[in-house]
Image 1 (cartoon, helix red, strand yellow):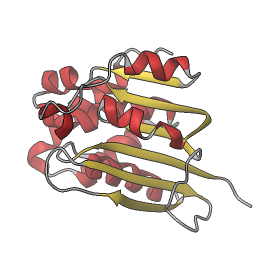
Image 2: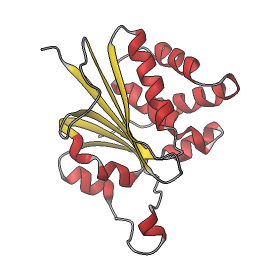
Image 3: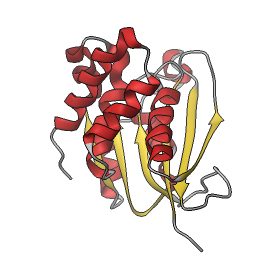
Length: 195
């Protein structure tokens, strides 16, 4: 059986998780991998949970990632990182934007936003890399570029030359947004990479 690798991209509607999966999928396809993408829970309205699976390898039968199977979780929001943590495999890593987007129960006052999520995940023995991706996206020129900041951070651990990443971004992003997105990617890539 050939090894497949699995990346889960989790966030809320409107954060650009689907674009991120298209960039990753495009890069991997160009490198000759069999790639399967699947949007599992998609809520088009802002605030709904969105999960995308990316599986790649020599031969991939299904895009579905089971609990305990993800090599990496790319989380666009803190609570989403906690929500999908059970899908991370032993020894896997989670890259998380430290931004908090309150879900409806928190907005209505029915619940409170959990505290110390990064510390709790780390206490479970998980390799977690938190990053204030929103600040870096704003520095690049738009809060909407959080997805490219996180891809930049992910690119450090997915060992492909930076030129291939940038080419995949060029193929996936509209020309008028390209320079902003490339800058966001570069800022994420240059961000402090600590355990």
